[in-house]
Length: 465
Image 1 (cartoon, helix red, strand yellow):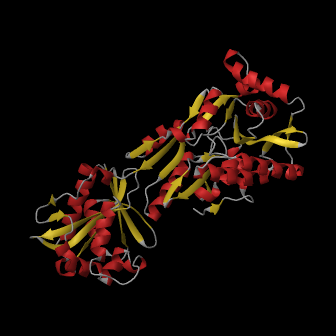
Image 2: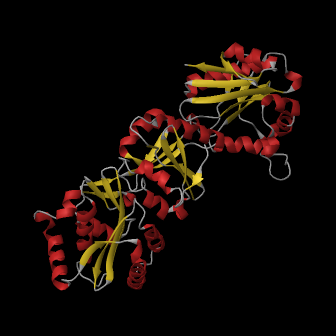
Image 3: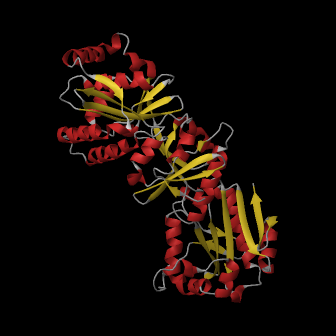
């Protein structure tokens, strides 16, 4: 996949997907992507008729749940593209702000996953008609505040904001900064990002309005409609004007939410004052956002097991194996047939324990498992299980030191590791490949697996259970 940084110029491409998005969560909108792009470094690609957004924050790569352009677009196809990308990058797929309705599909797709949901980032969802009208006894408090505001400021009026209001908008922000008294770093960052987002006023997706009094803005709001939901990205008011916030909430909803079923006023970011305020407007539901971290079958293992075959033992590499293991890993002819050149990953000088440490770290991170093949306790080769796809599949390879080749040890070790992978570890499909000219590997793989295809370079094999 080719990812592009999200910016103002390409935001219309995102809007094609978000304008009909039914997820109801604020992150599935142009406004949030632009507002928080410095924080999450979002980039996008388009696959299988879906929008794929990749985020990078705090050294982690995560993905939004794919957004289909049309009802018939393949979310599964987009997830396949994400899986392929992660496989090449050597990372497990991880998803953020996943809608609750999507959890079932992900759980069926990935056998090992962990989900979590932080209350602090749940969006507040209200019925549009409730905020447009504030009808009924339950909203008597909001109506009282609005009536008092109208009595105190009879000349105040709501109106849309246009690009021609730039100077008035800047004066509002200057006044709001003077009244802003929060020390929370995230709140300060949100204020900075919100001010920049108002530069988008005038774009087709950007809905903006203000309460104006004596030629000055005393409250502003900005949002966009995604599917049947009006998402409110910005709600700011000068606190000295009592009742300005409920007046702004109702006025903005009444002007822009016609035809919408829901209004999303976003999360509270764990701010106590915001939580109190948002709950006082009586949300119908909280839009829960889930983090989904997939894992491989290796996540079940506490340590590398010991396997036995007729002549061999397979177990973890040991420090005393380093000289023999280095000889195996440094054999350029075997590396060529193995299909991997260690030099592309080597940074700096090659240290004696480098190969050993790579194998140990791969298992520590549950990316791969390297079995030492032993004959009478002596290391004679290795079987590696790697490229786990987090859906029940993995790839396996085997290599033997030259002095032990041609005696059937590779086939014996490979068969034992394959049985363990499928019947004990719990994989559903095991894959392998070899170069077309590697007749010895072809014979070994054919003895354990069935041929699954070929291209100009490789022969492909697999075994399923």
